[in-house]
Image 1 (cartoon, rainbow, N blue to C red):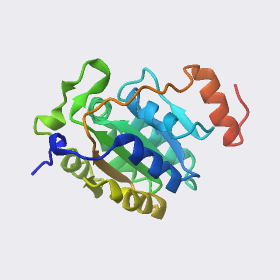
Image 2: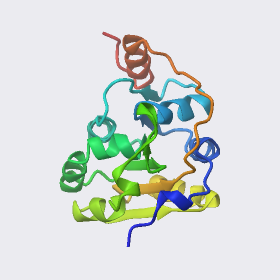
Image 3: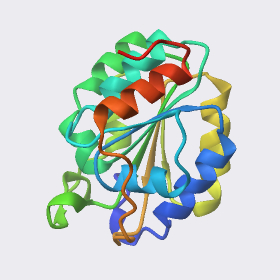
Length: 198
């Protein structure tokens, strides 16, 4: 039975900050909106790739990055609405089975960027069951703040792919906006990986 975000107690900002602290070398891709704000609030760094207007694209970008950089842990941090928009990418992740890819879905059961309308996860969709159905065996729900260490351990073990559905409180922390200059973010990320900007 699907767990409901309506009873969530996890503080999103604290969870994301603790996860990034536990995975300082991870390449991080963010979904648009609150996930980007949470990652940026934890500390900007060249290994963060912020998406602004590509709703549904975070997991696909993360997949491509994981395949291109198989020796580095790749962490996608996104929201339930964004992941629902890109649900088909879970099928390709399941087919390709990149061991270094972890998706963290911050699930508050709402579309936070468009007015807090209820998302499908608060209406019965079980993201863990969906991910497992696509062949991502290591898919699980996180309901306790302290389980951040378990998520980091699974991600760093590189036995993935992994999907962690993190049930967060449906609140809206103050926005902390990362750079909006896509060329700057891309070139900074490429340079961090040892590639020339273009």
